[in-house]
Image (cartoon, rainbow, N blue to C red; front, side, top):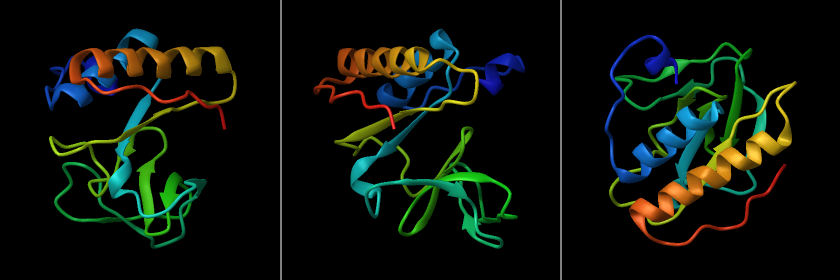
Length: 140
């Protein structure tokens, strides 16, 4: 979303990533999608980063050291996203991804209904252009 608002070209990654990016643009809700088979543990935890915790985002050449002030979504191995704008290289969607988790990123003042609609729109686009079936939309 930041890219498009800054006038930069819309990146074409693969059908699944492109589908949820379009859903994010249409809904105005930041969406993150993760390869469920690359996630180390469940449930995921929304927490503040630990000071000096390392995070390797998609497209980064080397890990960055977090300050402890960042809000992250994490599994047992560490952050899989800096909420809501940077996803981890470790859990990124690739052509080999078979199961994906879509997260609609909420914030104070954003109606839950809008989050659910954004997640459903992403699921609709993903199943239309990638096949498979959508799971249940849950609010946590």
